[in-house]
Image 1 (cartoon, one colour):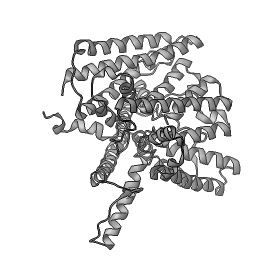
Image 2 (tube, one colour):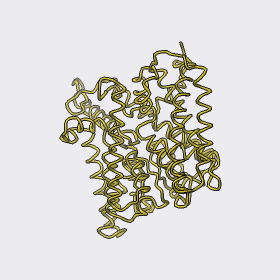
Image 3 (cartoon, one colour):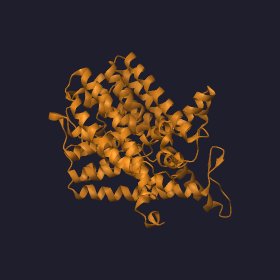
Image 4 (cartoon, rainbow, N blue to C red):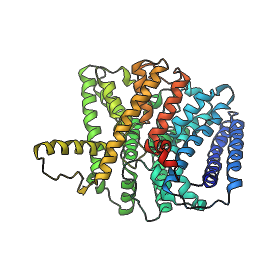
Length: 482
């Protein structure tokens, strides 16, 4: 492991990230909100730090191994979240305290969508745009972007790629070369964003709101330019457009790549993971809508609209809102919140544990039941027609076990700061699943939580975004041995 090489790459990526603060400057000048200076100062600090890391080590060249990729991914997301907070701390009257700024930055980049801000409607346009852009960049992963457009890194891209693409089956590539794979992912991602923006504009949004919400929709983020989120528009058409693109973005991007290359959509319905997601959302929607109707919470039309939207929004871990589902009757709030633990498909921008892992856990559970009936039988776990290697099956159980243990550890940690149980478990679950909305005292926003609780949640967001093991492996002695 070469420290100089890692500093060189981090410095280069940090300088590249500074370029993402240029569009907010242009937005600030366009709307004359006076915020451009804050972003200019943030750019200067970010570029200077990146240069200090890069220039002394610019000649360090060495093939990047998987172990180095884990370290770079974890370090870069941590550094990115910290430097991404700079503009939010420098915006005059609307500036956030350091803890709140870091929380908001990590929430954006990890596509969690939890916010500490109230009065979003009155924020300067540049800040509104910047929050949405953070989610868009985090959606597919800034590291994948770097691999796609910076082949001059001179490192083995697959080491980074494996740490960045979510899900247990990380070795599959869409194209033979990793750079081409990353480019293909971003072409699809950008195309979906443009299509979503045009659809929103056709539904009545102005270009600024359409752009901002297309960023957070395709990223399955949940940030909005209004306190009332998507509910601000009170439009069934806007809501259905959002639902459609959330489902599309929650499906594996490898399927979108196949659809683009083969000019066919049949494989969407042949893919076990995509089928499970669609059936899961359909079943949950039926339960939710019927419950809202039977309890007279809403009339026929509103019950269908709000039920369908909140199910898709929460289950895909987007977190947009048209209604406060935390006040819905019976077990609905808990049911919807638990649905977020499933999340999106592997290789999508969704959070959660990923659909493929849930399928594997269910199938392995059934295998153990069958072994009780037929002790000598050799029973394989299959996804579709493909047998799953025992190594992947064991990794899924390992992931699930660690996931549950970390959840309870952070739950106790947040409760220790003085937060009540309902608020604590929902905020930790929301952060770890990159969901956003929570119950209890955080149902409106996270601003009133203690600072220590916010830092614990920042760690939870990072663990969720990098799928736990990418971060935890850094804390094992074996990782640092030569």
